[in-house]
Length: 289
Length: 337
Image 1 (cartoon, rainbow over the protein chains, first blue to last red):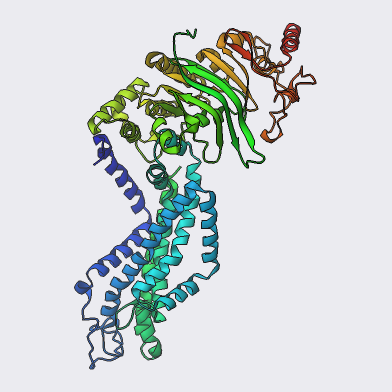
Image 2 (cartoon, rainbow over the protein chains, first blue to last red):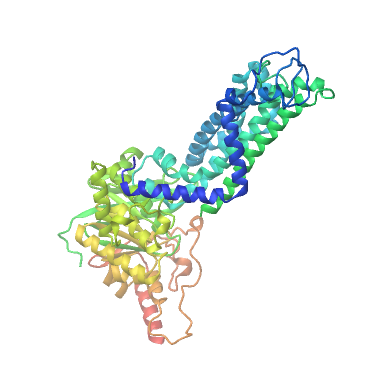
């Protein structure tokens, strides 16, 4: 792929070296394991879930955890373990979709604004101030309330607020990178602005964004399940951790497992992303300059 | 040294670069005029803040959009000062190349050296991938990088400072520019490497017929490398001439002071001469000669009337009202010491 064969021979070594250092860190190993399992569960829940997550079983209502139902059953006799596993699909999707558009838009906007500065930067600054003035959750809830509940509207609402954080981060990084002579060297070599921004500056500016992205995916799951709990995100009977917790809240004293088990799944996945983000932050910091 | 049969490639006429508001601009380069011939190395000397780097950057228009460039920059029958960004982009890198002071930060740390050379080749030539690779190796060999073929896949941090500056030069030369702007290319390097890099620039200029403008604050570098010298102070030219003329027969009090501050045959622990005072701030330049405040021979008219560049010999021009006094003043000190 690369124009220079020599380069492609050396690249894998560097990648291997990076992975070697990564897997020497316990936090990376644990985080990676949790997230890898989560992704696997999200990709093929049907393989791992013992029951149909939507099938009622009126003979087994609110059964405590047992061998047949390790996480117990809910008020319609549905297997909680199966529902928690199927919920991985929705919640991992939320982790990705609620962040990836915000990341794309934010990084692009931040890169341009950071590179050009001037009036665009001033306008951008005011917009950011305006959005950041509102508490994150309140603003998202307000937007969802306007658009109507549902997953897609939730993604739109989160993206509308969340891109600002990526843009701010990218803008600051691009501004520091821009001060390096290689940015001026790019101009002097007659490269277009777009080429300088995306090929030269952005790759050097992206690592804090990646780290933040990891943490943000944990936050997105929390946010998504909060909205699900409030009835603004995923809608019942879909299995989603926030929805599951919400369904169990009336039975907290009689059937605690209905809320606890999805809660544990949230904590575990969030922990996985955080550990991964932490480890990456350390690794990238150690690697850069 | 500079024979008249060589043609002029670049001519600056009353170049003026200003920053800040239009009402109260900061004038970083003020009425600077000089020209460079093919195959010639012109040294641009002065203290930090004297406008030498801004002069270079103005030529390529990279002080824009924050800075405003006035006057004429005549290059191959065109005025670069009047070109827009898109047209300038075709000149940059292809016809005029530039290298910077810090070889540490002038290369993208994430791309291999080979990719960075071939990126420039891809932008400015029609070579295909294979030809670009061959050419990249040739360029690295030309600037004296040993085992060039094996180093194409290396990242900038795997090169030493001097080697990186060579890589920078190789990238700059990729498109056969007719003019190389070198912004203190050896300041960040140690003396032996400095010498190698200067010799390299000299031989490339001679062999390729490439004109070079070398910005430096080191008179030793000038004496060793340049054909002609322009001395700048406070954004203005104060002396312009061949290296022999400026080093051996300086007339401007600032140039005389600079030369006097180089220690020659002195006993250890002798206090060195330095020009009294500090360079003026760009916002507080006098209407007359910028050097007035620090000049040992300044007269009444100096602060108010701008001295024009006047010829004092063939190819030798000085901007000073009191040339005779300056010469007498420094002669006398020379004799005393």
